[in-house]
Amino acid sequence: MAAVQVQTQPKPSPRWGFGAFLLVEAVLLTTAAVVSVLLGAPAEGESLPIRHVLIGTITPTVVATLLALFITVVRGNGPFRDLSLELRWDDVKTGLRFGALGLVITIAGVAVWTQVVGEDDAQSAIGALVADQPLSLYAALTVFFYLWLVGPICEEIIFRGLLWSSIERLQWRTERWGRFAAFMISTAVFAVSHLEPLRTTLLLVIAIPIGLARLVTGRLLASIIAHQVNNFFPALAILLTALGMLEA
Image 1 (cartoon, rainbow, N blue to C red):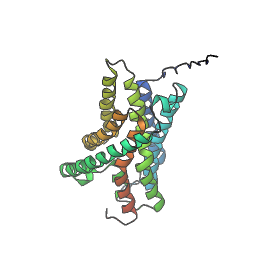
Image 2 (tube, rainbow, N blue to C red; image 1 turned 90 degrees about the vertical axis):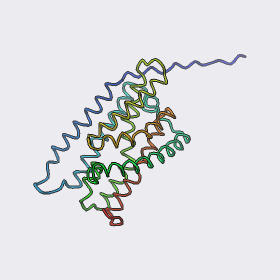
Image 3 (cartoon, rainbow, N blue to C red; image 1 turned 45 degrees about the horizontal axis):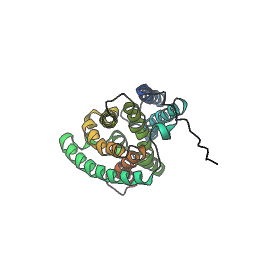
């Protein structure tokens, strides 16, 4: 008896595009503004409380990421298919390699950039906000795990997930050019969207190895791992400084 072949219907194309990324970015900025108003400004001559720094930094990014995932569920095939988020050991290894490359580039880039703009202006926004404030162990661990693990996941879902996939699906002449365009545009937008004008060039350089991990594998996990590796030492430096094990 001949075997019966079951034909599976291909999943429909996602019903979201570049507009989804613009919506997510608008929600991120709006959430940041609303949270800032709700928390209120510090008194004159006082620093922004560390609790406000953490809430104001983490909340908008997490809300925007959840919206991005929600969009892929209700108007697409879910994040694993739409954002090329597959769990592959090969992608982990590729991400580690590009992350290590990114660390070398980051260290060299920060050293050069510090000489150009000065040590204070070379700091990241969150690094500058927590630099002169005593951190409790809880706050220091929150900053560490957010910068190292959670932040990179959120940013990669938004930029090299949602944005990258929407650019790739445009009608390019070839699939290869579509991937390269996604790499270039997402790298530039990633750097600019941090809203740190003095560090935009540095962020652009730092973002290249992370984007290459996504470009080489065609999947999101590699760029997430590369981003996390790249963020590990800066996050660790903040943690050790807060614990008094490293001079500020």
